[in-house]
Image (tube, rainbow, N blue to C red; front, top):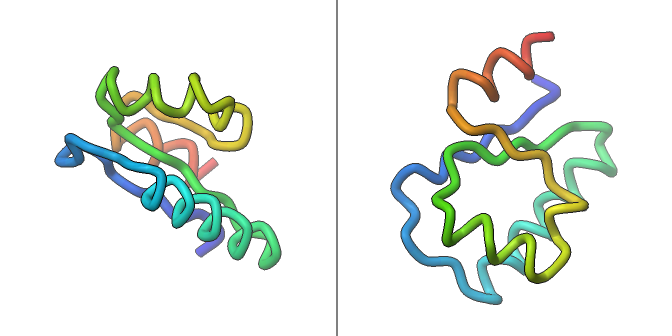
Length: 73
């Protein structure tokens, strides 16, 4: 498996500790030449990534199926 997908469909809140963990996960995966996709983020959660400029680091997909399809390509 070269891609890890995190489904945010049930995540209503994300604080700085959560962001820090996601950055750590991304770093570890990149060191292993793997990809991280974030799927189904609410508008509020996505705004957090935009306001912190972290949207430049992560790959977002509107649906879980979109992320799965992208991982399989």
